Amino acid sequence: MQIHVRRGYGTDGPYSLEQLQDMLDGGAITFDDIVWVEGTEGWIPLNEVEGIYLRPAPELGGALVEEGPQTRPWVRYWARSIDIALICIIVGIPIGAVLPDGLNNLLVAQFIQFLALTLWIPIEAALIATFGCTPGKALLGVRVSDKNGSNLSFGQALSRSFGVWWMGLGTGLIPLVTLVTSLFAYNRLSNNGVTAWDRDGGFMVTHRKVGIVRTLVAIAIFAVIIAAAITAVMDRQALDSSPK
Image (spheres, rainbow, N blue to C red):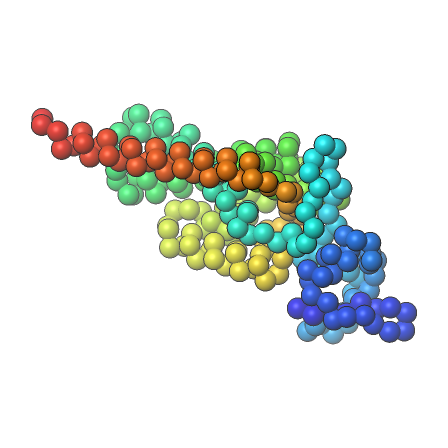
């Protein structure tokens, strides 16, 4: 996407979406500036360009927003993966206690994921409305807000969480559908700088410095989850093969 900025009787550019965001962050342009986007017929205000956001100022005591593009699909993916793993464990423990043999059934495991993701919608919305993040997002420095940098209302957060569940995860019921919707969401975020649910709601996702400590903690969390899953499978296999 190539974008030109009107300057008096002339124009500057072309700029990419990321360059324009950096100029806005640095004060070189404002939301009131008029721009022309490649493929459109007329000039529009910058605040109408999809994928351009006014980032909030850093919170007191928080790390500065990193310079450069804020489009980081993989950071968001790992943050969400941590959240999904946590909610699946919470949902899976009572089900496993009642139906221990059911955890070895792929259909039951898939149902647990579907149930966990569905229950996560209001939980995630409450966390984002209150704190601006979830456990996974907090660990990896991801924050969700409106374009003014304020926390979303619960209704806004609920709408966003439902959009992620429907358009980003495909409800989590059928693995192939989840894969396809996740790939579409990844490509859209990578190419346009914004997901469909954030664009439709006018929401902003910002990233702060993660650092080596947080990165190692995230890796450790996944290592523990994977080790626990492998141990559970091996214990079940050993139990099934033991003499009756």
